Length: 178
Image 1 (cartoon, rainbow, N blue to C red):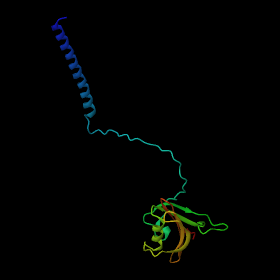
Image 2: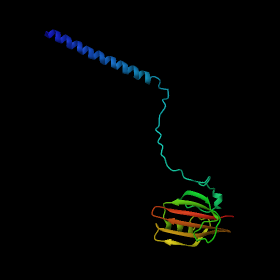
Image 3: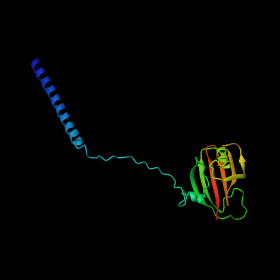
Image 4: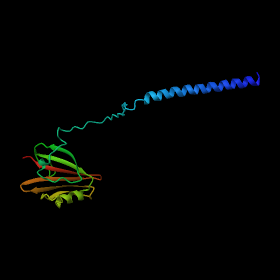
């Protein structure tokens, strides 16, 4: 083979490579044009769905709901989130001072400690004229305490309990059956 034949073969190879690239670019260009031509067409968006299997809580119908009228203007601690409403069965036999039998209980939870919550109610910081005083409990500090107090307004008398641990304080309002 001579030098001229090598040059011709190299040129043919280069031409084939260039033709291959042109064909490839044409195919890609047609695809881009075809799929991008209708800009007004909405392309459905797929969102992943993650299913988490967890136990279903057993909550009575309406247990996570209450109307402020049920509380007869009793103040709810401002930073508290509602947890539950529950109708307790009537009392039977001897009853402790912390019993909730024979009442409807409403429970809230807050990140604030026992001292903050207790003083808010005892000092009537809500300005609703509910007077909360007296009671019993245990106190090892603002993050480890429990107590029960009685709150009065006019002829209404409710019991209010606080249970504090390291992370939260639970507030339970106890309204006796009428």
